[in-house]
Length: 135
Image (cartoon, rainbow, N blue to C red; front, side):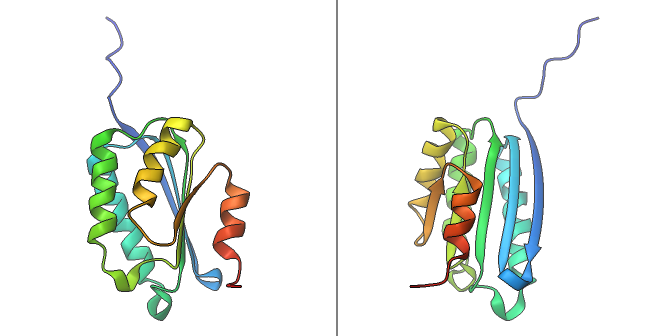
């Protein structure tokens, strides 16, 4: 008997909150489905709200270097989630990091929908931008 065909979607996800730096750090890998994007958005919202008075004064990092492709339907869901968030909990800065040209292109489309969002090629540059003090 042959092995079953791999599922079209599969995602890994890790979420860390650093209250001292007001930083939400989400790490994603695989091929997220629209449903994955939906529950991930809920997890991130809960993490933001856990910051209490610092919600809306925080920075969010989406490390998507492990994402092999972001399907169009997942991109559309991410856009709906970002546009649907209450502006009072929007991050001061929102950084996306991607390893592939295709994923960067898809994330740029998402970043264009939010003020204070940018896409980066590497994690160190994204973190430096996120955590720098205002000039």
